[in-house]
Length: 93
Image (cartoon, rainbow, N blue to C red; front, side, top):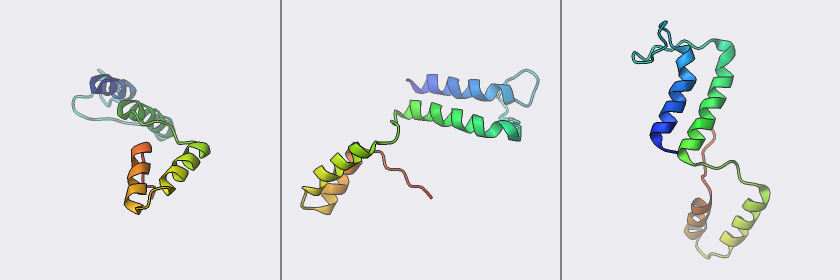
């Protein structure tokens, strides 16, 4: 998916919440009802994942095999590099 397609999808999600009657988002005025915010965040997260190409969470089996393969490296830096090549590692905080 191209970035333009992703931007269009995000704008399509936000357009119903445009503060003005024409539904344009040029000014950046968006009003999101509190009840609809969780669903909108979930939809935006899905679109962001599509744009970035990030896969879903790794399975336990995938993690096990990656850790087993990484443990064969003698250097801790090599182990970390191997894991970073195979997975996107996000900080949770």
